[in-house]
Structure formats: structure tokens, C-alpha cells
Image 1 (tube, rainbow, N blue to C red):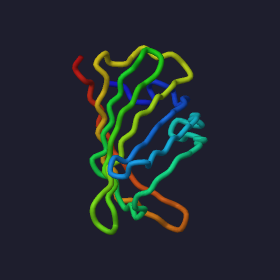
Image 2: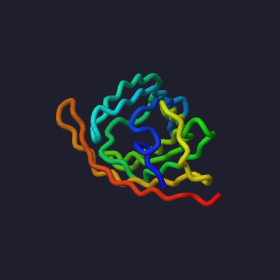
Image 3: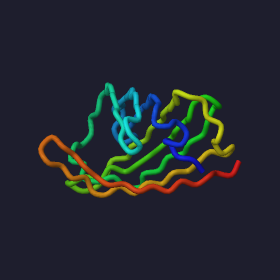
Length: 142
């Protein structure tokens, strides 16, 4: 099993399309460039475009799961999560991404990887948000 840093040495781009099945017409597209500055520090430039017509009182993220496969050059990601709301209930979020490392990689498991992530409740202080996350990566059987 490999993580994103092992595959990319921290230098990659990500094109992602996020949709919200419960809110048709809501779709966000992101384009990010990530560069490793130090071993545990990254610089990210991201452009976000799209429309969202759902609730905005998100306080936590639950059931965060992604699957990675590869086309040999890119990591293809599909993911989903439940955005928990302060007002109760949740909003389903699904996405598809293409992650393009700056350098070729050769360690990727043939069946792909399943990644499950636990995210702490979001802490919002003015215009800053913080959270902690912990993930588990498992190789998929082909």
C-alpha cells in the first residue's frame, strides 16, 4: 500500500468534480496544484468554481471514503462523504478526481486502494477552519 506522498513526493495536480445528489444542479469543480515545501508541509494553490444550492451549516464530515485506481499515468479517485449539519441531518457529497503526479510512479497496487478516513468535528473560528483526520489505506483485490 502506498499513500499520496509516496507516489508523488508531494508534487501533483488534482482536478475534482464534486456533486450533491440531494441538490440537483449543485456541482463544484476544483483545480489544485500541490508542492511539497518540507517533509510535512505542502503549499496548495486551488481554484474553485461552481454552484451549490444546499445548506451551509456543516459541522462535521462522516463516512469519508475514497477509492483509488490508476490509468498508469494518473491516480483516478472516486469518493463520498456525509456532511453533518448543525441543524440536523446530513448532505451527501460525491466526487471524481484525476490526480496527476509530476513524476512517473510504479508502486501502485494492481487492484487499487480503498481509503477510509475519520474526520474530527470542524472547528470554525472567524475565517479559519481546522480539523484532525486519520486514515486507513487497504489494497483492493483485482
